[in-house]
Image 1 (tube, rainbow, N blue to C red):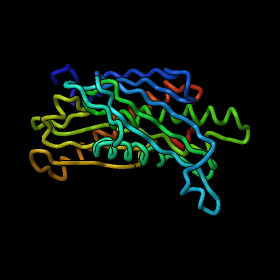
Image 2: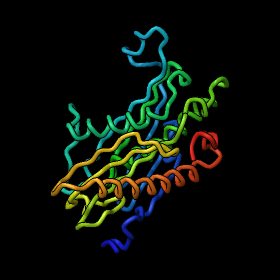
Image 3: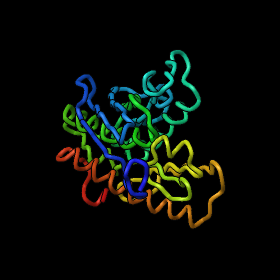
Length: 250
């Protein structure tokens, strides 16, 4: 058993509240253990200037990530004029992950921006941002399709996506590491997968020692099981708003 009572392959308790704010088409309060994020999705009926130069401009999905000052101890300074390197890397990961399940031709010349703001950080903020960001994205796409009858959510979204951390801590492979485990992990991986079981991205680092091929496979196996659970949570939380056909996402 881990220090918080979980088994090695067990996710942290997950809380999801959709429609957390009323000003965005999609807004999700998502909490895993103590790690807490607010993910909002905004729709702009336009595309970035570089997309306009395309012969037939298609849509775009992008993301921003920010840690609020009170999300950590000691206090984290606000990123006022320049986003730091870590935040830039994380928001690019979130954007890439969400774009992997979007058909931009079906979206049309529109931009959906996902903002992930960390309210409290206790490990796994980037992976939780992807998992919560997808739910906010779904609500934004559904909102868009309510405004435009020709829009079809199940054409825009071709699969679901979620992410989870996994690593080796004191010789054991653990799923969904919190800060205590993550800060002392010998190996740290972040795994992004679609609901149909395809990999989007794997970020892996040997923090204190190298790891074998078999250890990598075990980490990916446990991460895959975690993604199945996270996808189930996404589907159950969205309910009738789940936009995917049965043959799109398991």
